[in-house]
Length: 229
Ligand code: DC
Image (tube, rainbow, N blue to C red; front, side):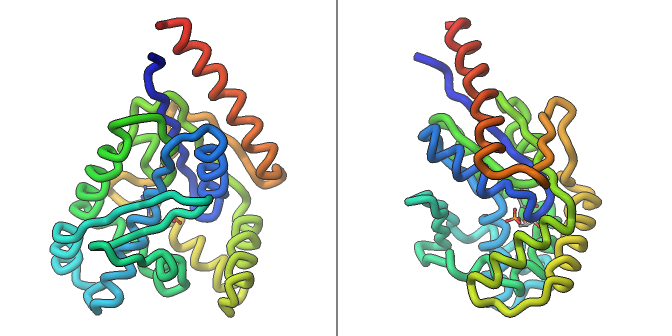
């Protein structure tokens, strides 16, 4: 039996991680772990309960809920205590608060436990900010995805427009900039490029080119693993 393969992808907001990770997971038949969706789900619930600025209450919340991810037909469905929250976690309101919630160390500890558990049984693709450095430091393939801020803002703005969310380009860009700063400067598990990560700048690449690039690397890893068996 070939040993399982773990692919970890990190990078700043809207760098294309989700599209790449989803696509890879579907093509390879791997489990997809969208770690950002978990931080978003906690943030959404904290906003709904009106406790998002109360760190102790958020910690209490994360310790007492059950979060589940289900990857179906190219979509990550997110459930908290059995209630589906998928539709609510990618709004400007959640975007405005998610970096603050995700810098709470206790929140990270709880979510990292769940993420590692999802990786116990088989091949997987995980993506986020610390999957290459903290969650899966021994991943077989580590990728750091980047893209220009303007390109990232354009992609995210388009996503909002498609959903009928009326946010200006400048607002989107400002939010990305702010999140990048918080995510990469926080004390616990900041976004950073792992030394052994392969850096891929997606500014001028199509998703197909990105995937082709990564699949080649996965094939090399598979071949190496088979030789070792
Ligand atoms: O990838 P995303 O935009 O859905 O992530 C939302 C936020 O969650 C991001 O701004 C920071 C946080 N996050 C994190 O701190 N660690 C991760 N592994 C994934 C996301």
